[in-house]
Structures are given as C-alpha cells and as structure tokens.
Length: 171
Image (cartoon, rainbow, N blue to C red; front, side, top):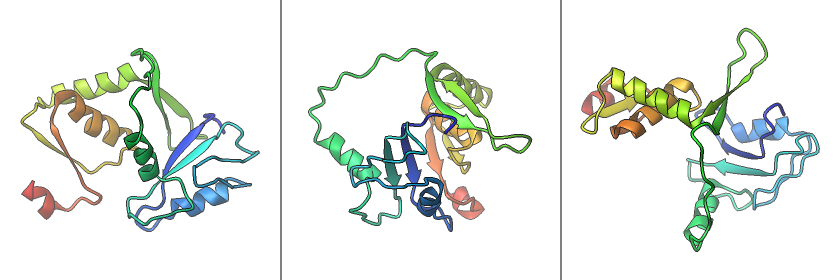
C-alpha cells in the first residue's frame, strides 16, 4: 500500500516458501482473472499480477510471465517506448525493517548503473571475466554487485540458487 504498486511480479514459490499462498492471504478480497487483472478494494492501485513460475508448472488460471512473453512474441513491435531520463526512478527497494517499519528506497537509473560501474571498476571487472553471484536480486548486493555490475562491464554472470563450492569451482 505504501508504494502504490500497480503491477506485481511475484514468484509462485521458492524452495519451501509458497509465495502465491502468502499473496492470497495478504490481499483481502483476492480475485484476478487469467489475464492477471486484479480486483481488490484494499489495494486500489494494483491492476495486474504476473506470476513467475520457474518450476514450469502450467497454470491456466493465472497470468504467468510466460503468458506475458507470449504476448510480446505476437506483438507487431510498433510500440513507442518511453524516453528515459537517468534521474527517473527504476525501482523501489524496501528495507528489511530491522530497526523500524520497512521503508522504500527509490533508486534511479543513474544510481543503479553508477553503483554497478564503480563496483566493477573497483575489482577490475571486464568482458573476459566470469562473475559468480549467489546473492538474490531482491537484495541490493545481488542486484548491484551482481546484475548491474556485469551488465555495465560486459562480464558473464553465473547465478546459483545455493552456494555449492564444488560446483562453483567448475566455473
């Protein structure tokens, strides 16, 4: 409610956590159709929910990331993209709330790309490097030092769900 989210992309589950069930409990009058349209009086700004189901379980009753990608495949490509300004907000990352109520930290395109640039420059990252990241992207460590760091410097990003030293050594 504090962020006025209009589109929510959420994993159906991760390891033992069933995020979809949690979502159903959070949204009081949860109902949305297979196109992802939401109708919930307690969250009037929320218009669409997209379920990311990496397990590959087919769900005809939900609007999934695969459904969204399929719509893009059939698009004519004649959509005008908005002009971005480096100062425009790219995302809102919420603090954990360990010392107070969680707060949204709004990050601009400039701050996230500069963060990735300076992090990679500090470790002399380049296009010949392979970078192993086992921090999740919902944490600033995974997002900036992993994703944007490699994106800016052209390094290969390797992701892993669990840190397993034997497998990491093979990279």
